[in-house]
Image 1 (spheres, rainbow, N blue to C red):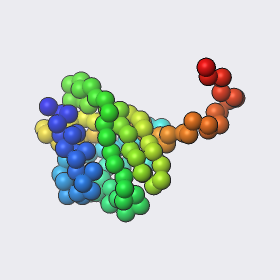
Image 2: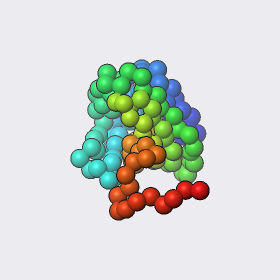
Image 3: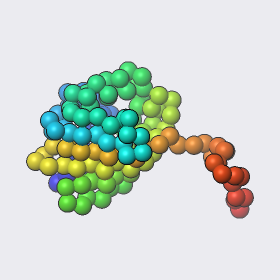
Image 4: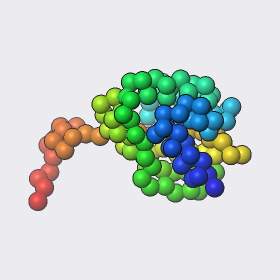
Length: 128
């Protein structure tokens, strides 16, 4: 089951275990950011380098997948990162698993706005 590999990845991330993190990814891994193509990358060694930097910048970071749906080789998950360089991030990551390794991830993660943050395009509607 693909979700169990993703859960193993989450445990490795929360333990800040770079070897265990990198071991979850296949040699042909592709990390894609469709809304931010300049962030895209390839390979498990780049995964290791990215998370090494993240752990150094955000020593208190925690990662959770709060909801997930598995469809074929894909795990569609709703993710929540806390204490990520002083931010909270939420969004969706679509992870493709084949032959027991993560082969592709598509990231749709964004910082969480505070409740009183300005809204692009105009004022907020009044809440009851």
